Amino acid sequence: MSLPRVAMLISNGYAPDPRLQKQAHTLAAAGCRVTIIAWDRLRLYPATAQESAPPLLAETLREWSGRRVEQPEPVTVVRVRVPAGYRTGRPLLKKMPRFWWHALHELRRIRPDAVHACDLDTLPVACLYRQMTGTPVIYDAREFYAGMVQANVGPEISRALDALDGWLTPRVDAVLAVGERLATRQRALGGRVWIVPNAQALPPADLAHTARPLVRDGLGMPDDALLVVYVGYLTPDRLLMPLLEAVSELPNVWLLLGGIGPQADVVASYAARCPRIQALGWVPVDDVVTIVSSADVVYYGLDAQNPNSYYFMPNLAFTALAVGRPLLTTPVGEIAEVVRAERCGVVMHAPTAEAAIAALDTLRDGALRADLAAQARRLGRSRYNWSSAATELLDAYNCTNIVKNCS
Image 1: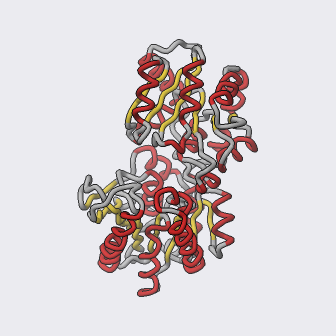
Image 2: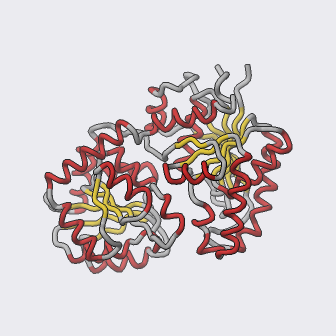
Image 3: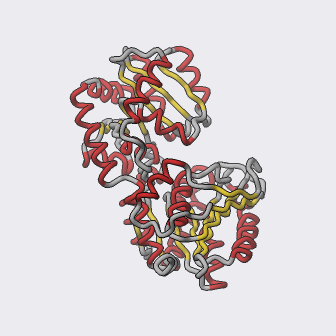
């Protein structure tokens, strides 16, 4: 019996994409032959590649109850090299049909048994292929896409994309949502929804003990210093300014910022003035968990003016829970709702420097931090981990009968 084939569409170059990487290798462990069709807009990566699961994910999947094969096949990556940029607004929309055309050509070549479409910008070509062949489509709704791009494309196109989402969602076989709020939205549009959070493979239990001195000693940080970590894109909607200003004013509070983006120069200027602020630049995916493990607190801010923020439960939050680190966040998004409900961190009362100072002063209390960390670790071990999320992913695929009958 031949292995069922799954084609996964994504509109970035797959560098790799952490969520898709976990999903792809999970499906391979469940007995599927997986091909990722990626849009390499900047022509940075090989046109084709074979990828095995990274060690931590491979270890998780070896113990996962849904595993169907002992030696999963490597995942194939095929990159469509239509040149385009990122965050370019309307000009990008003109390039998208060319990507869809090439992606459709790859789908017709692969002849998959299921198509997995990541975000709304790959869903039209997946649905077209479904109409042509009857192939089931799984829609991975990672964001409120129309809200996410509104600032780049304008309100009219954003409304059109929202309408497109509402038209296509009821026509797919399964919808994956990253959290409760997005799941509620997609159900209201008529989708059959499974919640597959972007949870992490759990690292070794002793990682925190080894990472803490490794990072802190390298920076010359006092043992009693409070270390705050942020790793992600350095963009205005991540509200880094209140945190930068607060740390600048608080003695014995240190801040590590990893990532690139339009506010990199701002971060560098604060780091130049305050030696307790360290700019790490781009952090390789495999190093993120080590840096987060060294922290006392993990920060993530969201701009309430961005319509997508309401639905947000970021990747960094799942990493913090996986290693048992308290979260510090602004009062926006699903992340704030989880932190309040589960008592795994502190929610600032406002997105201001004054609120950040007050929150960090609260987090100086070692006993409180220990309680918050224990709660974060409990959530990571019991609910927000990739073994649990992988089972939800498999359940969604079972509804299409793709995985159900494979050996």
